[in-house]
Image (tube, rainbow over all chains, first blue to last red):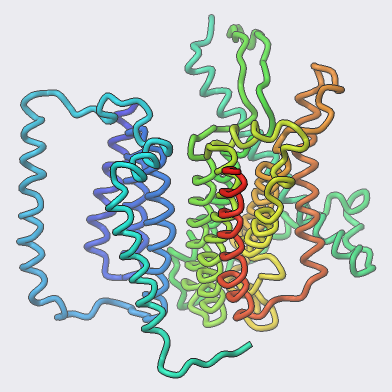
Length: 171
Length: 352
């Protein structure tokens, strides 16, 4: 049963990522990317990480992707301009190969032994809100604070950039 | 033959889903009828009263009419997205109901059906009690934006595109206040689980409306905006955008948008009842006999939900529409700071 669900989400995730790359219409690309995000959320659910799965849907599929869609609709790109990615293409191939080497090494290391890493690492309550919350506010407090400051800088930056010179107050 | 407990559990879940969908779709049909009758009442008219007794068969007539209308697709529309946009808005609206509890535990007595022996089982009147229940609701509302945005974009019409873009901005803005208004409740309950939130309100004075009145106000306003209902229906806004994002839709696809709108209204009303008005808990539960208490609770829950649906309609036909800049100003400059203030007050209250 679990295997079938895993296969379903895995196939959907891989198939939609491939389709996303091959797709020329940016709107369809975005939609396929949402499919990838949601099937990855499904995989998280199978690892009993309900919180991470929902956050994946809310943050990636829900918020960021909507903004993405927004930009594309306003820019009205009907298809991507050819020739713009001359240097990027070989670079992308190189980086992908570099990225896949460690992944492949990890997969190979499990292939022989037959022991798959267990999802919860032996802990109960893995991926639940309480545990993530207490970890974020104790062990990982510094990274959380740094991320918060970074986000604040981004927000202030956006406000500064959109404000053009004179400030007009209406209403 | 005794039925395997696993299969029995699955079968009960399927039955519950079936009942839920039946109830939701029937309520949607009668909600459209209620909207027309209440609007008529408010405007001192009669409203639809010809089909069946008191016009009660009107939704059926509407449905048949929708089915026989011509299905029209604009020439330059993106056909695939045009077809799936109504589905993408309807499905999340229906999925929200999975975590809303309609009642407590019920015991199904043992019985025999077609030679199958079914043991006594207990089940809750809720499809699934996720431990991240409330976040799941927020996730579904955030996905619902796609249907409107894509419906507006794919029709290739400037009015629909404007409606779609307005909706994306509006729903993203108000989702923040919606989420933050619930934080106070989560702090008091200490759980994201719907059953725990309901359990925290078992006494009448424990209802969160008494402990979180500000949160309720913010939640209601944000929910109105999330559902694109008047006074925040700038997404459709007849005077400016013809019909907004669904201008080009016709026939059953148009009615799917309508079903989705009313289904998400019901979901929002059920959430108001669950989060702030005790869910299925009712006052004077002890006075009702043990056999009838579940019935009393479910009826109470449905009544509370129906009341908020009435408020939705009442507000729609009483208030004028906001201007778009006013809408954004309320969302970001009023509701969001108030929601944060509510979190701070709740925190101080919990410490003292």
